[in-house]
Image 1 (tube, one colour):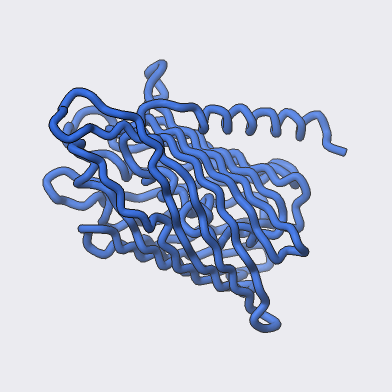
Image 2 (cartoon, helix red, strand yellow):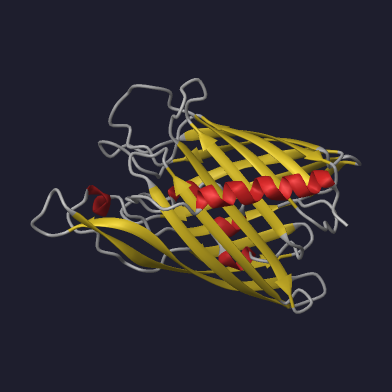
Length: 310
């Protein structure tokens, strides 16, 4: 039986999810969702769907200005679980981004098959599909646009043991036409290689290093490197440096640092705060306002099977 506190948490997640699926004008791709891969690896690799073998829900609230009322915000929601004795994973993700120059609304569902290849290793193979609602400008018109639901398809693989993982994925396979709008020059179809693990530094100290390589359309190779340290599986702090890639103005890359702090609230709930010194999707065309962005995370696991490292 769920307690009243757990019921309130579920209600809060449901409210955030409804914000995430609200409709609106959409211009960009899912860069905001992609950059949350440390909190939600399923964002860039559908093969991660069901890896944790229990039902998970993660909601992230993103805001640039806390001192200005009604300033732009973004919400993402992800949920996944397994069936068939853990062999199959299913998941859902939603994004409503209003913090970038162009706003974005997207939905996707994912499926993964997990098989044991040895006593220590498992391999997950996954695919995802969804839609992005985009106002595409017609050729010959600079004022009028038609809202279109453009498809999104991605694939991935995730090889893992108890203390190590490597994932290879391409979350967007389709090449889309955006008419005359500027997003045509920034549309990305990234290829990701993600490597990480879990190592005990002491009895109650766990290190989770992470390394990501990303090759994006018309961009140089990008890499992220960092890690998180968990103390007694209750409190975690971390930092990741993102080198290169991303939207830019004048052809320069966006390099930035992300700092994180997380805490377990009981056995079912994890809260997190993340600060990035720059937002990956900004164009940097105007040098006004803060460059950084704040993120608040709420993760809920109804029936956890132990500490969730990823």
